[in-house]
Length: 259
Image (cartoon, rainbow, N blue to C red; front, side, top):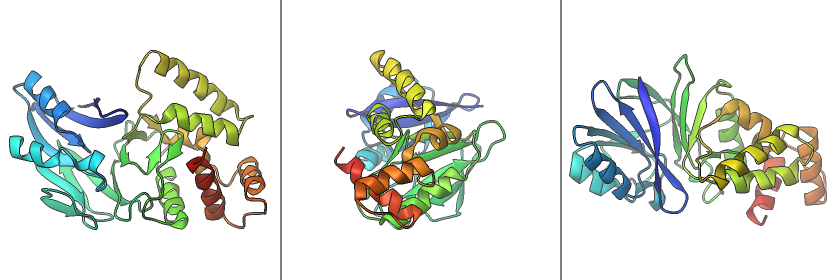
């Protein structure tokens, strides 16, 4: 049985820590800072860091990789199309890898960056998705390198995963994303309920993750571009009718960028 915990980093990053209690081996996803991981390993001296999984090249996701590899000898996995420090194995769409006994599938999700990948494990009880900065709780990443068409296709691909898939993204952006979702769909009861719940969690300084694919499809405007109410709001903001789902997505993303 794999346990997954979040190691906070910087102001709002999470480094996901996967732990196999039976073997005392662990793995981390997107360690932008080595210190939280090294502190955990020091406090759990009989554990060994086996693998480092990277979704994309931004510094707040790879900044701790070289130090962790030097300290532990962990194998570094990362996207083939991007420059990843100390990478041992490069990965592309539909590749598979085994970490802590989990057989993970690689999903290419360009948009935030061109080579961005996600890691998916289709277990029967709550599949796992580590999606970096592509899909956020109630939001999505900015388009630093890709196009709206690419990002819309990537999000659609993730939205097609089973509803009970647990979504492990890497930033605590949920409350601000839900403020935007409320502006897009002020009468969506699922959005309003989630906003209230997340406000309470953050007032207690509690984590709002993981999410699920089902919850995202009910409350994330970037996964709801086919909904009439969302399209109408995007059309109004654009001042004209948007002629495709990717155009609606682009309109929403441009609005969120200045929200």
